[in-house]
Image (tube, rainbow, N blue to C red):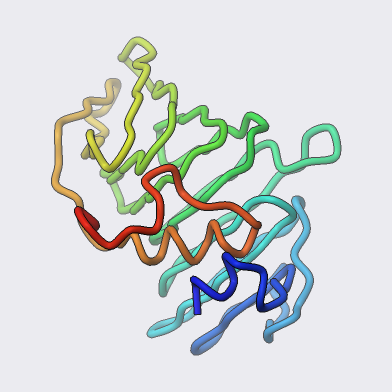
Length: 195
């Protein structure tokens, strides 16, 4: 299906594009086709998964996840991930992700985050990001294909980032998300060397 979407054979549905289980948008039950704007709050229930398209950004939202979108100059400008797991692909405009105490500035990237109490897992699947947080200087990260996953821990008044493995997201999911917004990921669609 992701290849058909990438070729333009299937139309991409803006808002809630796919849904298994339950989800809400601004506290109201969502179904496939529910609109989502760059000012909305999305939550998924237990055992659920949603694919959400907001203009030229797309999100795969795993179970028990809550995140809020904030608009800046008519486009998505900020994301607050309160809890859970989100795989995202973004257009070329700058977006700031706030996940626990970590602040991540991105543009035109693919990224996966898991937010738990006291810990954030962050994989910059491809692209460039600036990571910042309490007690740490801004760290610029550049990757082409899951090169530097990080486990970010909150140590009271300071934050620390350590290398981590690639977990809980796949290249096929990134291909699907990019196809929904009319793009291909920079690693291409060839099956060799995929996660």
